[in-house]
Length: 439
Image (cartoon, rainbow, N blue to C red; front, top):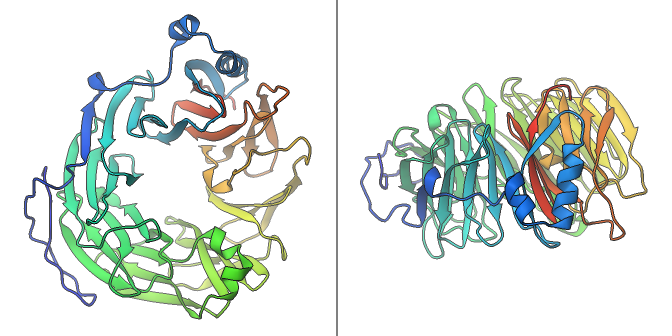
């Protein structure tokens, strides 16, 4: 159903089935554009030859010569020392946004041609996606959020709904989880100091239930499998700030609720001066990986679907660390020391140290942004090379990037891996290459 769906709700944590009501205003700031009317910023070989660019062409030449999994360069674009191109990966191919045109374009995984694009007229927006759906949240000033579900293959609008929720400001929680069947769970600001979780139907966006929850700062919403949703926690950055951490009051950090009806299953509290950040969940294994800080001590712990601790480890001692869940492994980076733990039981898989000089990783690198090449390998965008990381052993194989006297020209700030493509965005240019076997 195309149009808005505004549902009746029951306050105080009750469940309700919404009665859809069409609204021509829903999603008015979101415009779908067909592939034939969409443009790609990436230039093919003929276009690049007609428009030479030294830095872009050096990146293209290096990637053309790189070993597997890097194949032929399909497209490239140049710019000048700015994070101009934003790349992301989907089942359909590579998604791209540019600084001059922040709207989204889906590029085909085989041809790199535009499949569709979408224009969003609000100053702030966010998105989520599954293999079949692309979800746009238009966050208007002074108005409730609009959620627009698009078909991820062709960009066709499936449904739109306006949330019965306050305006989402920069400091407010807002998280989404696309569910099986195209349904969506949304965590946003509720009444008073609490948050709310709403479940929307995958067929028409109508509200199935709404539940008020105490979800700390509302940093996370995700699936634990077996019909459970996990919500809550605070950001990694806030936990890493000793002053902020010392001021935190005792209270509820995490809550697990039923995806079917929103009823609470269990909660987990933090003491004063402590907090939790959800690293990620493994729905198949029924595990949540959580970063917990108490004073100056941090640890990683695994929780099962009942909220019981399965294992814990202190990987960085008193030092703060970067951590991410990747294909059943917990990766940890503390300075130049890297390590990995098995998510199921916490045993150490490997430890290694990366070089201190030259600087191994670009500024702003986070393990949470590390894309998988497959279930056993991840792609690391280093300052001098693209590294294929073996998740079981910690071994790396490298494809050299160009360097120059400035030494930041070709630093990748973003890498993305789709089923058939690899996209690399550096400080002065971006390129997309065909994936090949053997790496």
